[in-house]
Image (cartoon, rainbow, N blue to C red; front, side):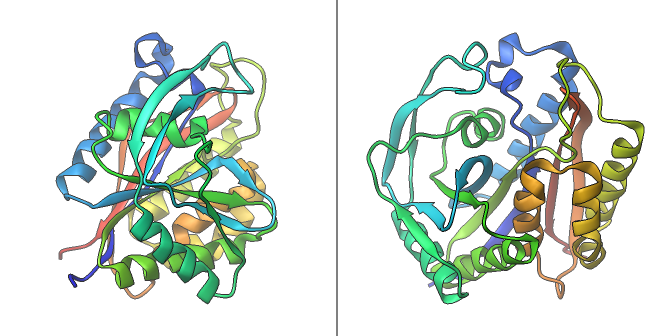
Length: 275
């Protein structure tokens, strides 16, 4: 078996106004361009699949993973049906890796779960980033739910379980946290986060882009509270948990940091440093 690992650790937004690239507002142009560029870089690594961790597949007690071989359905933005009234999709799953991930989560001591229902539908947080990162849906996708009973520490530990599953499965994985950074929502799609929230978002971005993973992890709980991070920062915490403190990373921001109804949105990629 070839040595598996996470070849790309990514964060990318999913504001529903991006669901239709042709109809998206101009203020998101730099955000969308960054997601497209990051996707091209990620696909050049020739990964085997995406693991997408969206803030909008909310689970209560268990860490559910999609085990379906294929996903055919329609994505609807239930909270904003005027923006996402229904988009058909057909996306390959990866049951083999899903099984490895469920096992790794349970072996780490956390309650796992398997979504095997043929009626499972991609939430827009799972679907929208892939429109830019992998517009041909060329790679299989496994979805990981966002467990609201989990605190920041548990989320980081589950992130480490994703890395362990990649290693044991022999697969080259892209882990994607589909989330905003600051997320104190207000009415008005072109409204920015507060100056202080933008400043703290930028500090967090700079830590990641400098590869200072340990400091980002250590300061994360305070940061997440200060900016009202989306889903309490759970998805960003899982992302941070996929990173190994003994590994040197190269980080890069793609495109611009942009607003959407008071939230801060950006695409960031961390890969193992070759230096």
